[in-house]
Length: 152
Image (cartoon, one colour):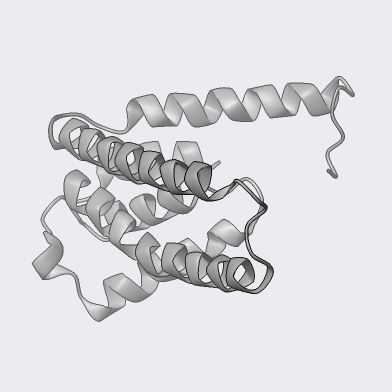
């Protein structure tokens, strides 16, 4: 459903706003879309990009705003887990792997964001829509055939 909604909104929404043009109402509606990602199967970035496109943000601006909107969520999760690690400590010998995992994650995350922003400057979200529909069909097929339960 959200893949189709992204496709329709991306094709039909006006494209006039940049980051400096985002209003408080835009931010509230896009943030509300982010909260929908608490539901299973709803992509946080997909929901926020769809809402941003619906509010008239350019593709690149919508993606950039979605990534910026994720920062408080990621920072909050990092602080929450960081406090847990400070309290319990890392298992012996896990310091270096933890550090290098953090570095690799940061580098790959920034690289993917950079590539996505470069992509959406010139192209639409159609490949992501196809991915969402293919994933939905796969999950639906697994549930219908009984290979996976719909409740786990």
